[in-house]
Image (cartoon, rainbow, N blue to C red):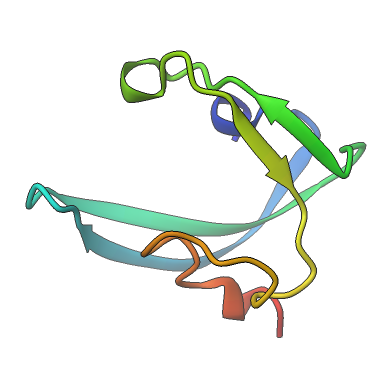
Length: 86
């Protein structure tokens, strides 16, 4: 979580889902989705991930949403939002 978002004050509450996702190149990845509660976080922030490789030089803009229908995410990224906003 810290590597991707810069957040440091968070607790993992529960595993929401686990699945297998096939990327365009045919690679299969085992994905895990967790419910996480964060504290002392601004409404919006920018962060440069520290993982390297394809993320090198990127800046991500983060913000909170209050409904699964508030934003449209790229394929696969919002698969389990309905389990959070119930």
